[in-house]
Length: 357
Image 1 (cartoon, one colour):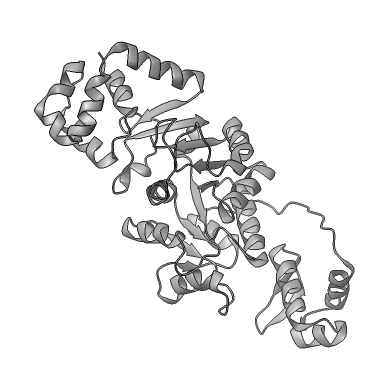
Image 2 (image 1 turned 120 degrees about the vertical axis):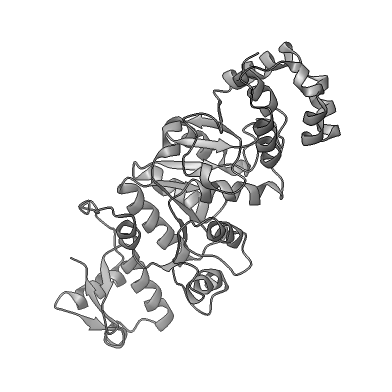
């Protein structure tokens, strides 16, 4: 039996990655036989219960059946030892030994930014996530996230919509996409982009698999962008992992009275990440020259058109716009933020607004 076949066989048992690294560092020979699973050292590393399960299935029929299952489901198995394995991911603590993949595996070694955040973003959170995901994707950055509700799915969708590239990291096996409402999105991603997981196809998604999934989301990236997140959000686990592994963190500031922005504001306040207010900040940090802006037409409401009319002859401050339009302060704030996020207007030094060039 070749080493590759033995690795494939072991991959079907979902052994924790730390044990796998210990195992394959210890058994470093090129050729294997099923006899290895009866060795005392093997049993000591994987544990008696797991070893017993492996021993019961240590035969070519089981191996061929598993390989056929992967083939039938169009799943590629990449090991830590393969050239296709992500070079960035190899550098993190507890790197997954196996990656089950559907789609374009070349994306594993392209430059990417992880975009993560709350599962229930505010309107502001939706707008800024869409803007950053779109601009980064349009400039050749692979958008990496976890297929969850909210910021994750918004980021994947925006990358697809603008013709960019995205990687979705799952917290369980491919047989049952979680959340099930994102099954269609997952199917769309696997066509020309990439779905990955460290778990075999039938492995269930549980609350314990999300933190382990998050380390892969961060580890694949050149930086982690947090668009909107609460102080106790699971996103902060991703932030902590990135900090521990020397991965850049970018955070977008938000309303200081909003719980949804408490996490990002805390990151900025404590100097744990770089404050970004425009996608160009990240592109500059990565040394990427932004492509020319595309001509985009926006459908504006009457109130938005009135605001632009006021700005047509020059810069205006908030009080002037408020007085002339008679729009409620909170609503005007939202409208100005929306116009700014879409790149239609810009906020200048001194708190004045102007039409973007």
